[in-house]
Image (cartoon, rainbow, N blue to C red; front, side, top):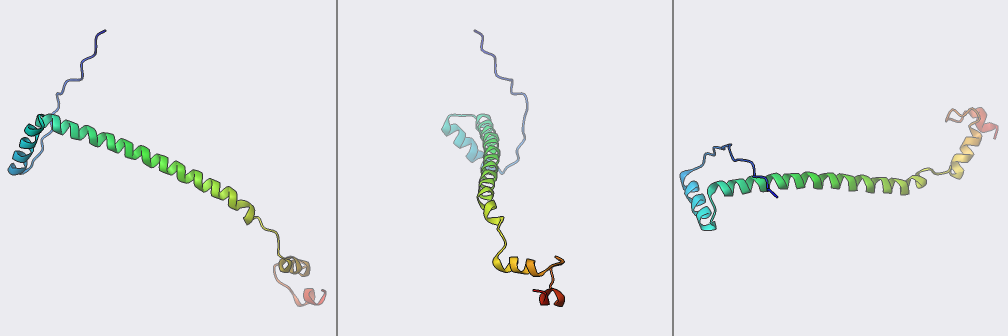
Amino acid sequence: MITPKPPKKSETLEVRLPYQTKLAFMTRCRNDGQTASEAVRGFIETELGERRRARHARLWQALVAATVGLALGAVAAPSLARTATPDEAAFARLDRNHDGALSLAEFERR
């Protein structure tokens, strides 16, 4: 079986930084046994992977929040559909024209 070759590295990226920073980076790469290009490629691949994971995590958080909200709504809904209190029922009986206000005539008719 023939394994496919990885894509050729044909693109370049120019990065400007202070000379001392470049020397420190090159020394660190040499001590780690890798080239500067390998280190930069590794950093880029890590960054891309972390952003993908972070986006995935945010989607899961939104899904969990929506599920919790729906569950709480389902629990709270029955308590929101309340029946009239005795005072409200008495007012409804007195308010014969159901205009939300008691006239003197409605009050005297009780």
